[in-house]
Length: 329
Image (cartoon, rainbow, N blue to C red):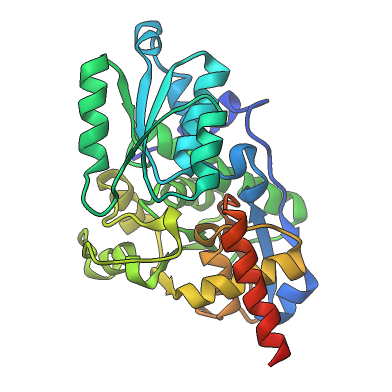
């Protein structure tokens, strides 16, 4: 089990690299949820998501020989940008295997940040196999997107900050809602949060087509969703939880929550109208769960992690326009 000390060490490595994103309270959100809701907006983070935390924590601990040979990662986009940015900061060559249908903004930003992008078909190709093959050819190190202790510890700094910020505000969180793909963010954050607030309950939030973690927590073993699964939440399309992350999640987490793509779209509109935040689909799932009142929030303090804001302008405009049309009907 990764310990709090590992996350605290990661936080020290990230000083001057990652932003200490704030906790935001909003009257409209409190009113909608009938309780205190605190937003942790990692959409304001370097590269637009929490992923820089784990990527930098991993790359900064490579040996000189490993760094010289470069790294290879696989990602739908946010981990890709985090790895590319960390590599540029540390002078390490990075190559990232990404779906050819990843949001254009994520593909372009990864290249802009210094990463070499290698595309594949997410529905017929195996990104991990492709990445490991490239790494073997180059003698490079593979940087997993979630299932590694250094990645988990880095992502856990989100939970560490939440715990520190709640203490500074003099509030004790009853529950924390975290978007979940493979589980790196929620598992690392749960370690930090449970160390400071043992009675707080952490919940994963996933798209209903990619509910592998919710099912795994319910069944007590790792479950897998089928290849036919589809969702607007490109950042949350893991088909099964990680081995390391699931062992942490099954020990520390409450039940998993699932939301529809329609719920996610409405949460993105709410974030724009009321929070003045641009949120990507995968970053909005936890907010969608809060707005849908999927757990008891009345008179309770709930923390919602918005994990990313990297969304193509066309899709974002379309989703916002849908809300405008609904109000005219």
